[in-house]
Image: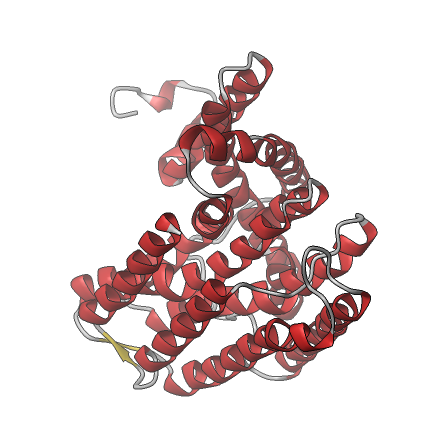
Length: 373
């Protein structure tokens, strides 16, 4: 772009080029037509999977940006509700498509990977890069403690069906009616807990599940309501279409590359759906706003556990592929380890680059174990 004098272009073209300069991740939109061509011309499952995954990344970013723009017209409280509801829209769409195709283990793995990715990868990168840039950083200890307690509670809720279901009814090869009833009951309780958290956020000065800091985005969007709604609709439709292609290529990729469906779900799917939000957490850490960065990472994990999981559980019943909240022992151990280390690191209200390295080390070790599993 340095060799192009944008002043000679019309205002519309100038605004487009300026936007792409500010949002380099938007250049990945070129993967959208590439994914469609690879799918139509049958270039191979690996190309289809890679291109569709890359295409989802900027579209997920557009969903987040459109939601943020709409929140400027609705006020901070309702805006927080919008962010809480649509913050994980891309991953929610991908997992819904996966449930429809019967890839339930992929869905459970993506849930585990989303929680671990936020607590270990995102928080670790934020502490590492923020610590290198700013030295020892501080954040609100009381907020971190409150979120850690809620996160531990949430993980315990997810553990209960996995531990007790074997004593209630058969789980293999098909879960019994009692086991499905347990999962559904837990899902409804989680939705109620999530709703209570949002109500608490509306009535208090600080949100419970969504960070409500004025400088969440340094550059306030100038998008109109119509532009925001149109962008939200187009981006959501694009994610839905690419999700169809992406999920359809999973099993051929597993066969051709020799990697497990579990590894794709626990590592790739969460990163694809949340990379835009991950970048925001790192960016605010670089600007020495560590309280906000910690809230984004932990808040996203809470939204996955308390909103996405129960929604998927309920929807799966109507799709003919009931999703039970029975996680395997590797997922359970990883969740416990991730929550435990994240709670310990955030306990003192301070962070540094070494603690970031420690979180990233745990994530990389788990990733290697999942790859070899």
